[in-house]
Length: 264
Ligand SMILES: Cc1cc2nc3c(=O)[nH]c(=O)nc-3n(C[C@H](O)[C@H](O)[C@H](O)COP(=O)(O)O)c2cc1C
Ligand code: SF4
Ligand code: SF4
Image (cartoon, rainbow, N blue to C red; front, top):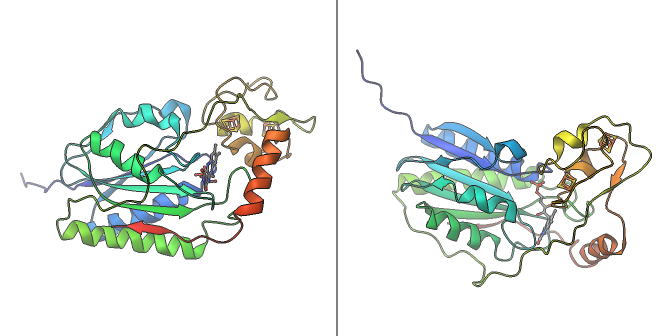
C-alpha cells in the first residue's frame, strides 16, 4: 500500500452574526489554503449549538480566528470557546472586524488568549465591516478593496509560514484591556409587521428568540443586530434613548473611512 503524505489544514474559525467577519475570514483563509496547499476546514461559531467546540491544530496546521470587535474587545461569548482550543504549536492568525470606530484592544486580547492556548500567533489584521448598530457607519464594508487587502494578507501570511516564522509581531492595543460591554439588558423590540416567519429565530447567535412568538426575546442579547438586519419585514429594531445615543455618537464621529491595519 502506498503511503500518502498527511495534508495539513487551515481551520477557518469565525463568529459572524451579520456576516462581515465571515467575508473577510474566507478571503484570508482561501488565500492561505491555496498558497500552502492546505485543506480548508470552516468552523462557524455563530450558531448557538456550534459553541463551544474543541478545536485545535498540529504544528503544521494554520488556525485563523476571526471575530467582530465588540466594545473594543473580543466578544465575551467567545471566551468559553477559546478555552476549548488547543494550539499544540499550530500557527495562528487573528482577524478582528470592526465597525469603522476602532478595534482598540481586541486584536491584542485575541492574540494573548490564543498564545495562552498554545498557538504561535504570527499575524493579525483589523478590517472594517458595516457597523451592525449603525448601518451608515462603514456602509457597504467590507467592499471589493477590503476583500483584495484580505486576500493579499492571506498571501503574505502564507509567505511568512514558508519562511518558518513563529514570532508574534507587535500588535496595537493596551493592557489592561479597556472595559468590555456592560450587560444593559437591551434587546430588540418587535413591531406588528412581524409575520412569525422565524428567520430571526434561526439567525440569532444566542438562540433567545422564541420560535412560537418571535416578539419574545429572552435575556442574553448581544445586540448583534442579526435579527434586525435579517428581518424581511423590518419588524425588529432597537428602540429607546440608549440605542439612539449610540447611533448618534457613531454617525457624529465615525463616518470617515478607515483602512485595514495589518501586523505581521
Ligand atoms: C455589541 C457591539 C459592539 C460593537 N463595538 C464596536 C467597537 O467597539 N468598535 C467598532 O468599530 N465597531 C463595533 N461594533 C461593530 C462591529 O464590530 C461591526 O459591525 C462588525 O462588522 C460586525 O461583524 P459581523 O458582521 O461579522 O457580525 C460593535 C457591534 C456590536 C453589535
Ligand atoms: S424575521 Fe421579522 S417577520 Fe420574521 S419572525 Fe422575526 S421579527 Fe417576525
Ligand atoms: S436578539 Fe439580540 S442576540 Fe439575538 S439576533 Fe437579535 S440582536 Fe442578536
